[in-house]
Structures are given as C-alpha cells and as structure tokens.
Amino acid sequence: MIAGGFSQAHRDTVVVFARAPRLGAVKRRLAAEIGDRAALRFHTETLSRLLHRLCADRRFRTVLAVTPDGSRLRLPHRVALAAQGHGDLGQRMQRAFQRFPHRRVALIGCDIPDADAADVAAAFRALGRADAVFGPAADGGYWLVAMSPRRPARPFGNVRWSTQHAFADTLANFADRRVTLLRTLHDVDTAADWRSLRAACRTLPG
Image (cartoon, rainbow, N blue to C red; front, side, top):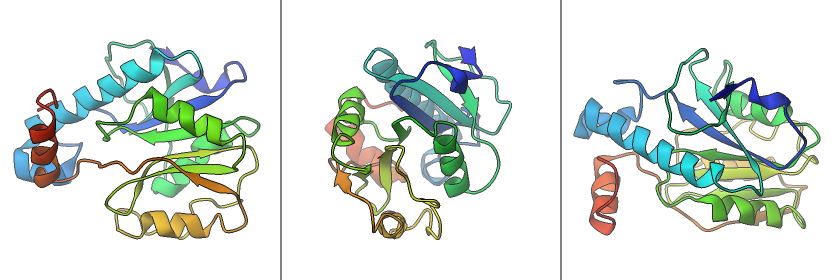
C-alpha cells in the first residue's frame, strides 16, 4: 500500500471512498440487523473485490480514501492511500476533487457489489462530452460521481445526505453543467438489501 498517493502522475483518477474496516464501525444500519461481524465481513470483502477490479485496470489510477484519518489497513492490493479529512460527506468529497484540480476524477462508493472497472471507464468516456457523470442508486442516492476540471464551486452543497433526496439535491448544483447518467445500481444498507443480493448471487460476501 502506498501512502500519500495524491501527488503522482497526471492521469484519470478514481477515488474509492470507504470507512476503515473496523468491527462496529461500518455499515451500521446493516449491522443492526445482521450483526457487526457479518456487516464487517460484507464491507471488507466488497471493498476488496472493488479494489481488485479497479487496480487491475490500467486505463486509470486508483486511490483509496479512508476515514477516519490515520487508519492503518491491510488489504491484498497495492493501492495509493489517502485520508478523507474532516467534515460531512459533501465536504470530504469536495476535498477529494480539489486535490486534483486539473484532472478528470471519478469518486465511487465501496458498498455497491455490482460496480466494476467498466463503470469507471464508462464514466471517463462520458466526460469527453459532459462536465459531470453520475451513477444513480435505486434508493435516491448515487454510487459514483465523476467530474472534469470544469466543476461547480460547491458541487455538494445543500445536499440532504443519507436520504432519498441526495441525488436530486446534488443535481441542482449542476444546473448549468452538462450531465450524463450511468446505469442505476443498488447499494446494500439494510438486511433486506443484503438478502436480496445474496439470493441473486451466491458469492455475495457474508
């Protein structure tokens, strides 16, 4: 794992946003229903699978941005590591983009089992004709956002996070930008989500 990964060569960059895998500190809504250990196992294996898919793709560079700051991780991937910093989700996301002011950047969540490198590559292709690209989530949020260097001053301002309004609120900040959408995917926040995906895919972690 490489620390200080934000200072490397100029290229398209995908930033994976994740909580450090710690018992009792990840997927808390899910953990309340299936238990802390099962939730941690799901989180760790889903994150590991996503990093494996992204790090194997040489079309872009992968950075893992974790919270809380100073977390030490053991993951089976050689990946650039960075801290998210303080503030709410929007402030931390904006900070990640600000570290790459002249690059095309995609930010992706780590709790979408179906997300893969092809989605990230599709986002960067779409940035050839759009200023921003979103991957909508079925619950009203979004699992990916990618932007060109032409970005709003406050792309994540006034967003009602962790609600069904998160995506719509964010889109309001891009009213004067060209926006493209990727496929809609499902994240896993509840036991019902978890059971549904387990039924659809026997290899789902947990």
